[in-house]
Structure formats: C-alpha cells, structure tokens
Length: 324
Image (cartoon, rainbow, N blue to C red; front, side, top):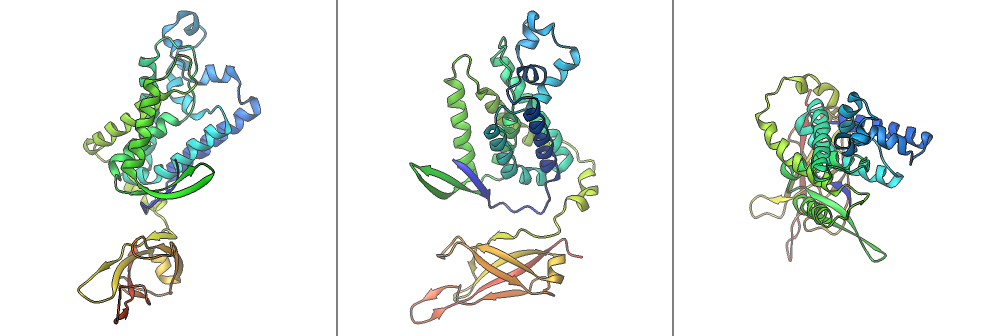
C-alpha cells in the first residue's frame, strides 16, 4: 500500500519537516559522492549494537561516536528507494503532527523517535555487528503520533492489484494499524542477519504513541506562538474536502470552504472534492476578490435531487483564516 495524500488539512507550513527532508537529502547526496554502499560510513555513522557490547569492535570508536550514533544513523540510507520511501512517508504524515506540536517540539520529538527506535533495536540485537541506517524508525514514531492524533483522517492509498493500480480511501487508524501489524509480524519472524531492522520500526511506532500521550503534560514555553508568523500558511490548501450537510427539508446543501485573509482580498481558485453523493471527484471553485467571512458561494445544481422538484444548490460558506 502506497499513501498518496491525506485529507487532514493543516494551516501550518511544516518547516521542520522540510528542514529534515533537506538535511537528509544533503546527506544522501554526500553518500552518492563517497559511495552509496561505503561500509566505513555505515560503521562510523550507523547504529551498530556491537559497538557497545563487543570489546573487539567498541575499541575502534570514540566515546563521542558512541554517543552520537543513535542519532546520526537516521540520516543515512542504503538505496535510492529506501531514501525516497522514507521521505515520502515523512511528507505525508509529518506536516499534521508538526502543526499539532509546533516546529521546535516536533524536531525534538523526531530525534527522540529515532533514538528510542535505536534503543529498542539494541535490546533485541545486543551483539549484532550489523550497522542499522535509515529514518524508518523516526518516521514510524511520526506515524504512531498521527495514529493517535488523527485516527479518522482518510488516506488516499494506491493498492496494486496484479498490474492494475486501484486508488481507495482508507481511514488512518486502519492504514497505520495494518502497517504496524505487518512490521510486528515481520519482526517476530525475522531471521538472524536480516538487512531490515523491523524491531526498530516497531519501537519507533510505540515511542510515537507514548510520547504523544506524554506531550499533554509537557508545559508550553510560548515558542510556537512566537514562530507562528513564520509557519502560518499564507494560502489555504488548494485541494479541499467538502462534506455537504442539509438544513431543514429543502433541496439545498451546505458546506464550508477555507481561504486565507490574503485570498479574501485578491481572490483564488480552489479544487474541492465532495465525497458524498457526487460522481466527479474534483470541482474547480472560483473565489471572487473581496469576499467576507460567512459569505456564501452558490454552486448551482449540486444540492439534493428529488423527482418532480428538480435540483437544489450547494452553498459554500466562506471561512477566512488568519483574518487581518
């Protein structure tokens, strides 16, 4: 299953996610220059349980290296598809979690996800001399956090059936629950010498569940508010999901469309998807310049349909965020 996008709209620009992706991309480019399968790089910057338990191995590494390896390993990757897959999952699930936590706290949690993922892997592979690399454990933590924060979000998923791609919407708790189940099954059946650290994925996901719960008890220091001007989106999402609802017995339906204060002044064009009762998946909606909070945009013929009574309209109520 390949996630394409989620329908959880966020008003924040995920600067921490973009920063992590940029740093990981830079490290991957460096790996390409020094050799993607350079074992020296893997042993120096990767996480190797044997560094801490095998004297004949640990004597080759400094105390600083032993301290930093549980963090540096998550920025290395072993192949292009390994790198691309991890960055894609971070892009899909990271923005919403960052918006909930704030950029600085998200960055700290991301590093903790990766660290405890390594710890989990360590205790189940105490004497392994095999380097572990990749952001999978940290991203598993992001997915665990998403699982608790947005369980009813829907994930547009590509499911390949033989040679035919099928796109379906899957609730986040189903998609992520199934993903975790598969990681656990693979970890439980893992043979010695496997080149995939399945238990690190399991540990990262569990860490995400635990830390997002503990986050409620961590006091806020106001940093996120001070940075909100930097992370707030100047434009609302171009693609929005509209859930129509009725009011009374008439044929008209009602929904909400979100725009920014800048878009209310200058106008905008949006794509909306209406998942209930309509055949076309996407509609283009033109937002005229000068709209105000609470104004209604009428989409003719997109309301209820009754024999002998014709068609109602869909009225989109304008909701202006970060109003000025």
